[in-house]
Image 1 (cartoon, rainbow, N blue to C red):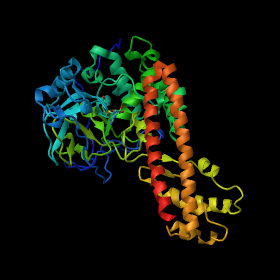
Image 2: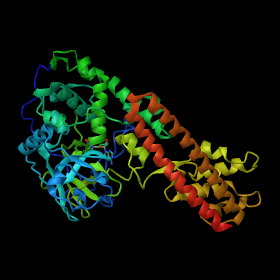
Image 3: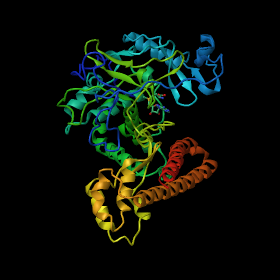
Image 4: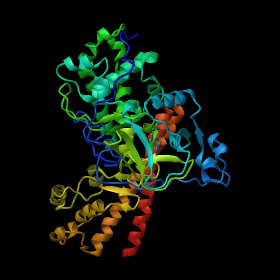
Length: 504
Ligand SMILES: C[S@@+](CC[C@H](N)C(=O)[O-])C[C@H]1O[C@@H](n2cnc3c(N)ncnc32)[C@H](O)[C@@H]1O
């Protein structure tokens, strides 16, 4: 048990300077993560980017009478009965959500337009109880409900953080708070929020090694980096954790163990919104941009939605507004950023089906395997490509091979008599029909070899799912990623086939 309970009424987080100011000053988009987390999120929800995103495309294709079609009765919808296409289960009657709503109401948040629900395709999320018009505010969460470093400093940890040298990072301050409060259990003022946080996560740092080995590159490398980052964070924070011993009757090493830090790190990495705080002397220089936003953080991601989100300095609420119409009894989505599936898995531990931002990478190794070793100009071509940054980010997407990939292949396929035209290729001009045909043929060969590799790995996952039931969820996640890649590659094959037919 912790000796000293947290202050019963932690004062509200310190006011942060304008992070966009005014209503919807900025967009729901993440911020630069501290440089010590290279494999973590580079941006946080709500950071200003100048971008906005398209709005919920999700609509029920179920039979008439289904709740989400709008044809069914509200009662039926709220009971969670639905067609198979949009199966959703209202969760708001559950004790943990009733307590969370009560806790939020005490802090000025009372909302009846959204309710927690379990969705068949996206898991737990928020369902609308009314239609939203474009431009309407969908949620406005008072500052009092936010958990920031201000919350941490104003409580019992404040004096320990203030006197600790070298200063800890804002991120580790938040992790420490989450771990200590979770450990406090019934005594924690934040219990209603902590009770609805996920118990486990599926970010790569939490995946078993044998599952990580099944990830495609470059995600696999980043997954290892993420593990190292969290392990190093744990090792470097241990002396600070030890300094908190007087707060606990138990050994702090039991309270602040590696699993606890991993859980807290994932909570912050997957759930915080962007809220900038001014630099404080008691913290290291890493950016202080995190805010945990209870309830609001139940909103799932869709790459096809458009919302605006920011902390409103006038109303002192974190606000999200929609840019399009959203129907009643549908899952309400926000957009975490224009991320491909590898990034979604790395930073949030999930994969979005039909993600328009996803592509399959062609590594330099794969490229080189398909080139002619006897080409005397090979090294010169590779050096030109390197100078023009055309050996990285070569992809197959849902619209076929990327311009970068095709340009790279066209340059590599220049015949000895065509080599002098390499600048034309970089400008996007056609050099010869032979060059066009050859580059498309190699693109198709690469695509077929990637399809084979993906099918092999899917087969391995299929076998492992049978042998290792305990890894079922983790394997399903990696399987979803590869299945999406397979769809992209198969689409690319068709597109390449049409392009080849067009030039013959
Ligand atoms: C901010 S939380 C959203 C609420 C979360 N589903 C929950 O139950 O607490 C972000 C996490 O939700 C999950 N998530 C978000 N969007 C998703 C989607 N489209 N499909 C599946 N899982 C999603 C991922 O686990 C992600 O790390």
